[in-house]
Image (cartoon, rainbow, N blue to C red; front, top):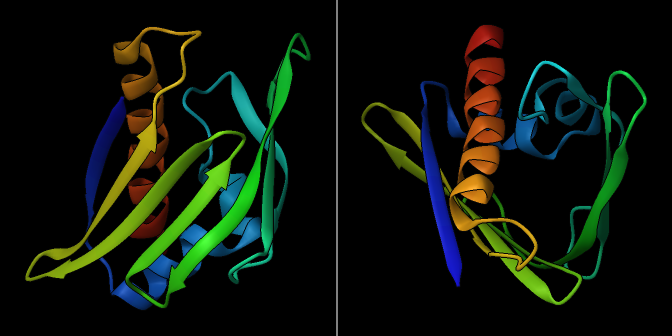
Length: 135
């Protein structure tokens, strides 16, 4: 099953793209709640390039790596990637009110669909706030 989430970012597409693909920015916005943070991030933004983000509970009780490989990159428009046996895509849709960032990904089987949707949406909403605070 695929899950799709989106958010509106009131900023130029070049700034939205940069913040989504720059490790230092990713470490600032890539969290679903205040008790988590991203401690490491790497991006090799090209077809066949790898990405990785280390997400950890701030109390040190748990952490995991979110990592994969880019399968398609269209500057300022689309990023497609694989992670494990799943795939995802990020679309950057320019409009009159800024950029809609739409993320579509394969759901996993360990957690309820709505929990996955809420977690990924919270991260994407943090992303929008991060970008808008910088412009």
